Length: 145
Image (tube, rainbow, N blue to C red):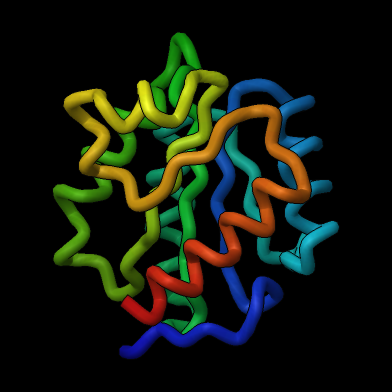
């Protein structure tokens, strides 16, 4: 299956954050930039993100699939551990996922972490419409890559 880019409205997103407010802000920013609220799946921890990833494997293989993971979601699994688990099973996935780290930390600091190589893109909080626009550009590059 070849994933193709047809703009932000053609992307399936799993957004993981343990704070409802952050999910609201993220979803609002994404929909402002043309992502479809019907294909933004909100979860509150890494475990739920992995479950949702399995659930959407039956979806349209043509559509990019993106996981936006908050780094810290205590006491549950955080983004770094979740991304590692996704990487381990990526070969067995019909729909490969682009992994995005979302954190209040500085992006340069995040990229220096040992687990950084598991992520395809980093964005810092708060998640704004500009963040969504940058993310759309990165998804397009990832699809074309």
